[in-house]
Length: 181
Image (tube, rainbow, N blue to C red; front, side):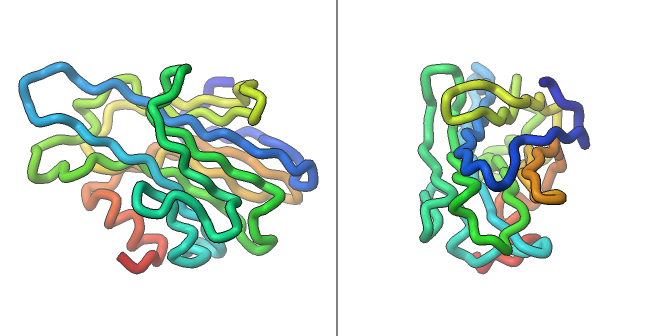
C-alpha cells in the first residue's frame, strides 16, 4: 500500500512476534559535486524520548542491547540502500515507538540537502519479503528527514509516513528525542 505523508496503516498484532524489515532507499545524483553519504538510523522511544542512548541505532551502534532493533546496512538486492530489522516481540513492553531518520553526512560543509536526492522512500515488509507499505518522500531542503515511525496503538503496531525535515541534521533529530550526542 502506498502511503501519503501522515498516512498510517496497521502493521501487525502486537502478540504475533513478527520481525519487520524497514527498507530505506534513495538515488544519488550524478554530478561533479562531492559524493553523497546518506545514513539510515532508528531510535526506540517511550513517551516521545529515546528509551535510552543504546536504543539509538546507527552506523556506530548497529543494534540495541536486546537485539530488538538491528541495522543491517546495505545496499541490498532489491534496491534498498539500508535495512533495519525490528523484532516487535523483543522490544521492551514500555517502548512505544521506533522512528526512522535518514541524514546526509557532512551536508552543511558539502552544501547538500534532500532536494538533491531522488526517489527517496521507506518501506515496511515482513521478514519473508511481503511489502506492507511504502512512502515516497517529496523533495525536501533539509539535511535529515524523519521518514516514518512504527508505533503501538491499542495493542497493535502501526506504521505512519512522517516526512518531517530537519535543517540540523541527525544531531538535531537525536537531540529532539533526548539522545546524548
